[in-house]
Image 1 (cartoon, rainbow, N blue to C red):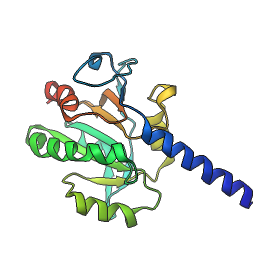
Image 2 (image 1 turned 90 degrees about the vertical axis):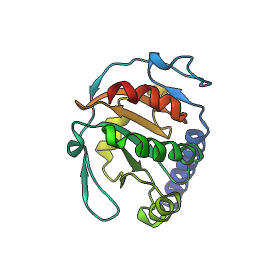
Image 3 (image 1 turned 135 degrees about the horizontal axis):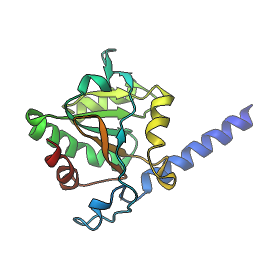
Image 4 (image 1 turned 30 degrees about the horizontal axis):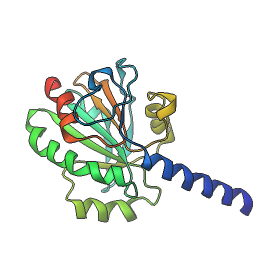
Length: 188
């Protein structure tokens, strides 16, 4: 049993290092060559964002359906991931600048240690948008399956969802604020 646990721990650690070390990748053709990004492109097929209901740090349910009619940035991240931490100030600024126009950022933490590590991080960063813990493996799998196979498992990964609930853009790895703005502005 210890041998299996050691193997799983080593595999998880290796996977985490690879995931956080990845360069910026996007999954749309309209971002190719923009800014200084090194975009890795794929299809831009729109599909409905998979439904989920997850708990926020107060224990309240947060459901994707509650945000119908808003443009959403769904950021899948973790406190231990440097590119994730680097993107968070962008999301704070975007929430502040565009909330009154119908934007809602939702942070979906992948931290297995739970609120014990997430709450202090949220407070330290003064995050101004809802954070939930990804405790539903079906929700994780549904979003991962929307990514190209070679990009699955990396974090951060971010989905832009339009007012009708369609995924219009997917990003894997770090992205600059301007790239997110280019996508959300026409949707607002």
